[in-house]
Length: 138
View (cartoon, rainbow, N blue to C red):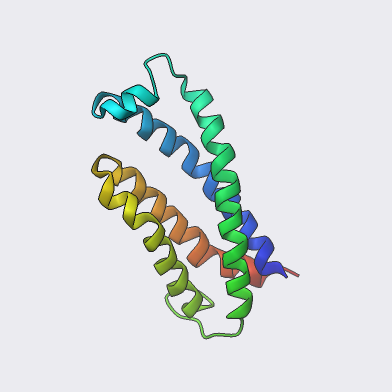
């Protein structure tokens, strides 16, 4: 089941890339939002926030990656398009990630750039790179 392992790898890479983006984005919101100012006082360390965020993102992203790996396993043998060896899976991953990010994108307008950047990284990792990783496995 190289698909599930490639999902784990892509999820871990996404957690590594998303942690600094999200940590800096949340700390920048302190001046704009009274709720964020209460949650993250001025003395909050970026490093400590990043460690806590990475712990949560690690479990969420690798779990999502393994579930998407099972979906990729189920869609094995579908035709390639869009630069991906498995076009239906790529479209499914795109729709899933957009559905996950859309509420945050709509409800928190100040986090739109960060959530859009994370969504693009997730779509590139899960939708495009993951089928290649599964295909390259022995």
